[in-house]
Image (cartoon, rainbow, N blue to C red):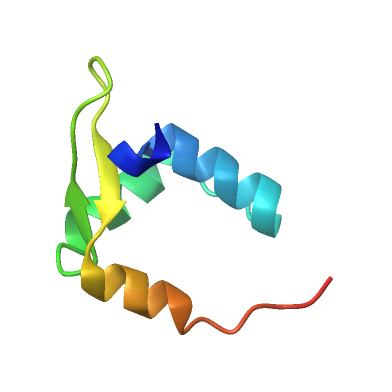
Length: 69
């Protein structure tokens, strides 16, 4: 279901697992609401909102420099 977007809780868990970043889900949701040029609201997951990247968001994510393990 990730093609439909992620909830803030899902994104928070993904950041923790993939990058070792502990980010509270409420802060993820706030960033999603604030960065409307990069992230848009998608189909809801029950009562939780889902968010997904815009084309500009995907381009910005692709340009990120990643640390090697």
